[in-house]
Length: 472
Ligand code: 4AD
Ligand code: MG
Image (cartoon, rainbow, N blue to C red; front, side, top):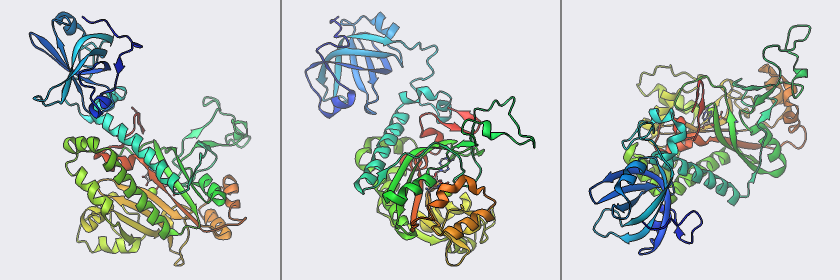
C-alpha cells in the first residue's frame, strides 16, 4: 500500500468539481469526501465518493492487491469520511470519463451501517426533515443549498450593480411593522414572576429595554428611514413571524429581501420587482444547469421549461378589481367566496396564475381595509397602491407598495386602526421633514427558492427550518 500523503502532503489535493473541470489525468493525487456507495467484487472494490463540490461523484477503484479487502469491508460504508490517494486514469469506455485508481486511503471517520440513518436508496423529504443535520449529504440538498447561496449572491449583485445601498436593519424592534400582530416577544423578565404595576399590567419599564421588544417581522420601517436619505437601499436578513399556520409556505424564521426607493411610484416598483425576478431566474439557468436538471428529473418535470418560459414572459398586471371580476366570471366554484373587499385566497391566486394567465400575475390596488397601514391611499379612497407578485406553484413571492408619505393622512389612518403611535414616532417623523413619494417591496427568499428548485415545502429550502411546533 502506498504511503499516506497526509493532510499537508505535497500531493495535489483537489475537489471533485475541480477534477471534472480540468482532469489531471495520469497524475497522482488525493481526494477527500464521503462514501456514497461501495461495491466489492473478488478482485477490487468500487467506491462512489462525493465531496459536496458538485453533484457528480468520483468513481474510486480499490484493487484488493493494493488495499486489503477485509479492511475495505470494515471501513468503507456509506457515509464514512475518507481521504483516498492514487492515480487519475481516463476511462473512455465507461459511463464516467475517469476514475481514481487508489493506492491507499485514510479513514477520517467511520459510519456504522447499523446506525447511519442514510442508505443507498432515495429517502423521502419528510424523512430527511427529521434528520436535518444530515440533509447536506444528499444530492437534493446539495443542489438546493447551492442554489440558495447563488441566488443570495445574485440578489446582492443585482442591487449593487444598480447603485442600491445594502443596509442592516435591526432584528430587535419595538414595533409591529405589518400590524398583523404575529410577533415573537423578547424579554428578560422572569416568566414565572412577571413584575406588575398597581393596575395589574406588566411593568415593561423593568424589562431589558424599558419597553416591550420583539423580533422583527420586516425591516421595512427602518428601510424607509434609510431610503429617505440614501435614496435606494435594500435589506437582506432574517425575519420572524409567529404564524401559527402549518402550511408548506410559511416559516417562523425566513429570509427576506426588502428594497426601498425614494421617488418610485407603484408602477416603477412593479417594473423593478419583475426585472429582479427574471434576472434571478436567468442567473440560476446560466450558472446551475446541473442542479436544475437534477431537480427537474427528480421532483418537478416541468421545472426547466417553466424557468425558461418565465424569464421571457411579461407578467400579467391586473388591478384587484379586475382580478375579482375575472374570478367571478370564471364559472368556478371556489371554497372561499369571491367578493370585492375580501382578500384573495390561495385557490383564487392559483386560478389567476395557472389557468387564466398561465404566467406570473401582478395584482395591484387592493382594498384599503385588508392591507397594511403604511400603504398609500389611492384617489378612490377605497384602495391602496399595493401589489403582490403571484407565481405558478407558489402563490405570492413578493408583496410591496407605494408608501403613504402624507403625514396627516398616515397618522389618521394609524389612529383609526387603533395603533399605539408612540412605537412609531421616528417613522412618522420621516413624514414631517422632507417627505417624498417612495415605494418598496419584500421578496421571500424561500418562496423564490420553491420556484427555482421545484420543491413544494419551504422547510426543504432552508438548512434548518423553524416553523410552528417544529424545529428542524
Ligand atoms: O407580504 P409581506 O408580509 O410584506 C412585508 O413584509 C412588507 N414589509 C414588504 C415590504 O414592502 N418591504 O412579506 C413579503 C414576502 C411575501 O411575499 C413572501 O414571499 C414572504 O415575504 N413571506 C414569507 N415567507 C415564508 N414564511 C412566511 N411566514 C412568510 N411571510 C411572508
Ligand atoms: Mg403579503
